[in-house]
Every structure is written in C-alpha cells, then in structure tokens.
Length: 138
Image (cartoon, rainbow, N blue to C red; front, side, top):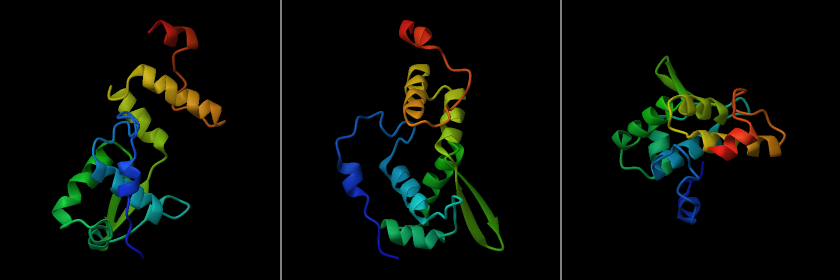
C-alpha cells in the first residue's frame, strides 16, 4: 500500500466547525485512513504498526489516543480477536446522534446537518428535530 498524505486536505482553509467534533488533525487523518482501508461493509483490519507507518507517526503511543477518542465519539468501534484488531467505521449518523445527545453538537448545527441530509435525499439523524419555525426562533 502506498503511503497516505492528508496534509493537502488539512491545509485547506476549512471553517473551524467543518470537522465538527473531530478536534484534531491526527484524528481526522486516522478516520480518513480507516475509511480508505475499509471494505464496502465498513470493516478493515490494518495492524497498529501499519497505521503508524502509513500515517508517518513516530509510534503506537501516538496513535492509540486518537483511536480511543474516535471510539468514544462513536465514529468507529474496535474488536480484537486472536491478536488481530478489527475496525468498524460507523455511518456518520451514529456519531452525530451520540454527540448531539451529549450536547457536543448544538441544536442549530444538528438542524443544518439534517437539512443537508434532506438535500441529498438521505435519512436525517433523528426524527425529533426542531421544525423550521423552532430553528428560526432559536
């Protein structure tokens, strides 16, 4: 596999809220890496050593905090079986719903996310979203 370089993505002048609850560039890099490695079912199983090498990190200790953070935010799940770690990359709605329930994503932001999903003919994050009138008055 060729070495990944996400610096060009991260160097773009994105608004600070673009990455939402992903607060660090390394988290974004790890999540993008896993997405690129995943099967159509959202599963991949690179070793930690592969991820460290491919992302140009200095060691596993620099990777694990980002994996744990992505798990806590429910962007991914990990399971280990017979010494091999499997990564499941969740639909973004899973993380968005979780972070909304925790108060990390504000109601107005969630409304905008759901509007975008509607524009793309996709299922919204949750059914109990505010109406346009409630959103406008907030």
